[in-house]
Length: 295
Picture 1: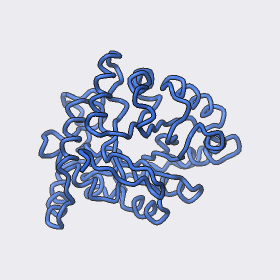
Picture 2 (picture 1 turned 30 degrees about the vertical axis):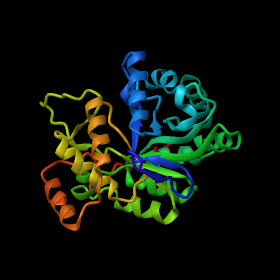
Picture 3 (picture 1 turned 135 degrees about the vertical axis):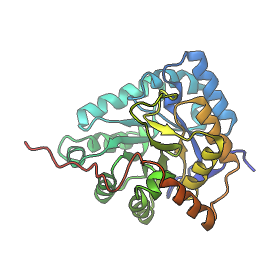
């Protein structure tokens, strides 16, 4: 049995390690440290790597570190550009920095508003770049990440994506009721579901000391919480989820994945009850779907 469980990527034959390497791990570190972290991930059985231009200098650090293993891994990247011109420019820059001739998965990043969706699908929109890049072999699969249910559902209705990357964790799901509609829709369409924020717990408080500089949310605080969080997310029909940006959280997520077992109904009920003590980082009751900007 492999040390790290792998799951099928949607309707495709690819199999991804359930824990993905969040590229932000190598942001703001020295090249040698980046190489060490990547080698450590490979040794733990991770074959799914996810990065984005918005993660500081992560692309610049990840490219050389990942190069020895490039033909053995599934590399995902993203763009926040909404125009064809901007996304094409960013795609080629990311390919250059990551020292690769293609991405296994290229994603529209952080789609949130109705205006985002309108721009992406409009004339001269980013989707034009994505489709052309797939035709040229620069990307194999097309996906998106979204931070609102409305945006995710709108995207899935308008194009046959291969995967959705969406916040799915124990507090947002149970307390915020955020995620079930997206999981259901993605399942019906056969999309691979990739989980963001598996290790998130709650929002930071204004006067709180922030131990974790690369997380904008308060992550789980103990390994026991990490194990519960990982078991919750991967008990859903999720293919994989990237790690947060700190090595201790990376280790916790990998360790928890190695002893993963699905939650029992009683455990699900216990986690749902515990989630009510925390303010979810996303909630269905606080819609982030903004109206189209007026011309």
